[in-house]
Length: 65
Image: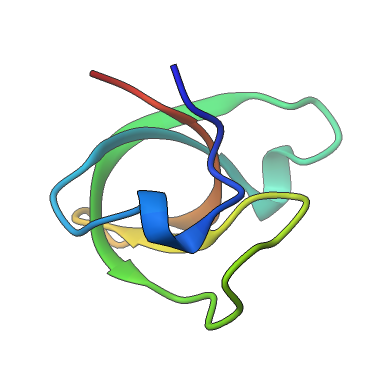
């Protein structure tokens, strides 16, 4: 399982776990499929920011198979 810190690893349609802004304190994960990649930098230490197909936005913590 890969973490989501490298933009090159993230593609639309990928199954991921993200942390929403409101869940950053607790670290609660939200599962979904990537619709858009919002981070332009090639690497981000807290995770690449994405929009899921259901519209939720957060940082990728895990890339699922």
